[in-house]
Length: 158
Image (cartoon, rainbow, N blue to C red; front, side, top):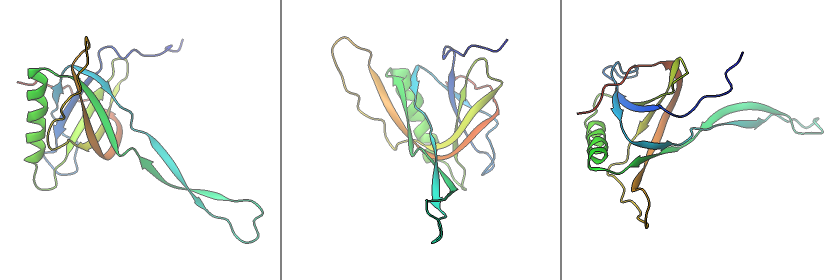
């Protein structure tokens, strides 16, 4: 019998940096108190392949357009501010063409989902309202959508 669906309970989000440029990191650091991770969409482009003799437009597949950025909503606490400040500092310290990868692990799926992205240079200032949870939305710039691959168990941050 097929699984009816999967819950988002227990999903983890982590980041790692390449030790060899272009290769998946072997260690990932867990990010905590994540409320929401946005979508990375893939929109195929079409190329008009019509000729003069065609009475209707004919198309062929072009390249896929990937989402430019992905919002991550985080509970704003002293601990999460430190996690994300450390992440930004780690990113700023990358050299030699090395990149930062992000990993989403969903319980019930054998592989994780990966993408390469750039964090903002500073953390945002959150909006505030009465009687609600204080969160911050951090937008990551997508460099490359990797897709699914073997998961790497993340280590807790310090």
